[in-house]
Image 1 (cartoon, rainbow, N blue to C red):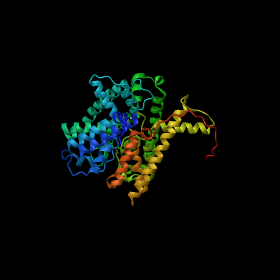
Image 2 (cartoon, helix red, strand yellow; image 1 turned 180 degrees about the horizontal axis):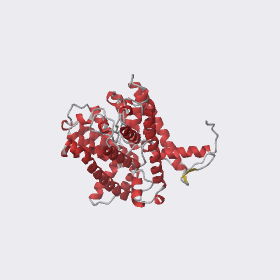
Image 3 (cartoon, rainbow, N blue to C red; image 1 turned 180 degrees about the vertical axis):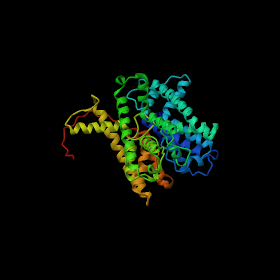
Image 4 (cartoon, rainbow, N blue to C red; image 1 turned 90 degrees about the vertical axis):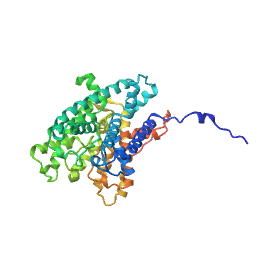
Length: 448
């Protein structure tokens, strides 16, 4: 009896849509990073595979959660691997791949442009090559300038070689919103230092506002010429940062383990730094294990909101949060359309915002159930803080990370990847896309 083999299946490779390809490429980066960190040349102390995977995931997703102390666990080679993962993960795997192709003088195919469009969250493929070029030129330039300023602070303290290296490490970590530090207590030693506070915070605010906004600012220069997205991001970033700073100052003012033990000027610097950090970067200048419950709840909300679209940060994104707020306001006022700054937001954008938020909440709850089950004896608030920090790719921790079980670390790794790639990217990579033009009769469902 003859066997009939479908030759078309043998010759045709498995076709991946852009979200699936990006997800696999990102997972490959994480696995490569874990293997490099497991090499003896990368370790000062013995490192388990689960911790190598955890650190690689945290670096590639620019989160900053660390199950081991990076400064004492890794050699110079290991720290450079972490920096490589942070830089590639922050600016985008496809962006780096495209830059190599551009430097080789080769043309970018339409398929590659579609992948870059997906990676950079752009509405169309037009202008993505120019955006990638501008992204790299601006990013490298701003990092070089920041290294120059931080070197003035750390070279006199540490010596030329170590001072420059520490400046480079923390500049790359800050700009890409990673939050990795080479000190076990983060930046607590520089809580009242103006240079460190200003440079580091400006870096992660700039990296978290979004590449599209930065390019728009560079091209337009004037407020009236900016796109609606840029205006919303700039205004809402300023507003939410001011509110966060004021509340951190208010909540922690009399806490003897955080702001309470600092001088007047140091209180202001600490409140400023810790107020602007939770949405994007995981740097801390105060003891996060000692913050009050109201402060931790505030930071959980900030981490859920996250950074800007097309930025190095995670979360549901600030613009998503703004769209939902204005949609709720429009509903309460009895209006049919969502209007922001005298511009009507398309229903497709509103649905997208609702889908992102709903999928994120469901995923976070699922992760919470598992981590709460395996981390028996740990406070729910601390667990919630850890999960939300991973989702927002923030990296702040109330001390739970080193004590996570193996299952806990795996779940947190999954949450970090989810937060970095975005809920819709992963949803689209798993779901089969079908377009249905059937219009069904109206039905009534009671809500509220």
